[in-house]
Length: 266
Image 1 (cartoon, one colour):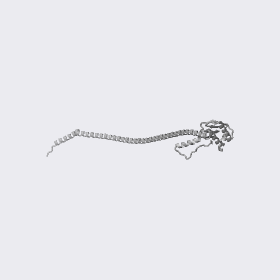
Image 2 (cartoon, one colour):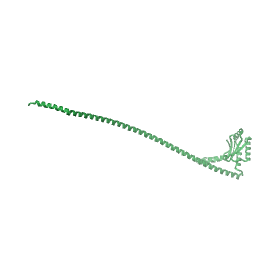
Image 3 (cartoon, helix red, strand yellow):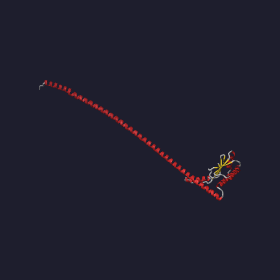
Image 4 (cartoon, one colour):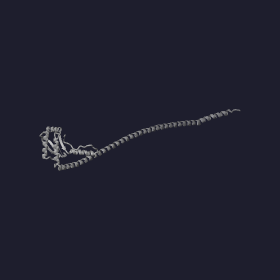
């Protein structure tokens, strides 16, 4: 077989020309397109990484915000509980204070009402006692209540204990002021003379005596000198009776109550 070298050479030239043309017009554009595509893909991947990084940062920031919100919420809830507890204590304290004030006001009102009833009862009792005393003395002894009070005062004056007599005597002797005798009623001249004579006999002094009418003396007589006093009146009996009424009104009982009072020097 004979080889046509011209044909082989021509085909080789054609092949080289074809390869040059392919390289110029096909391979280079394809390679450039691949490079462009690769660069675009790399850019897209970089953008995707940036987007992912930004998303991760936003996620972390969001998580931090949620955690911060949770902490703030817990703090607010705790503060609300504390404030609620304080407000509850304040309301309870205010309610207790109001209750104590109401109870105190009720007790005061009860005590005032009790005192009013005591005063009214004592006033009525005093009037009745005086009326009965006057009538009884008038019926039994033909003497007035005032006369009998003066007689009892003179008896008590003469019956003074030595210690009381000495104290009152010393007060009379060291005082430059006159002896004062106060009574709830005006004394008759003979009653005044009897008291002057009794003072002279008991205390061995010749002192000036002034007589006054004192409405505060509840049917009684009081002798005073230099701060010392000798008194006898029905107030003692009435005070004991008033105390007994007061104890009964407050639901307290006593085994024994004193009735009456003797003359005393203070």
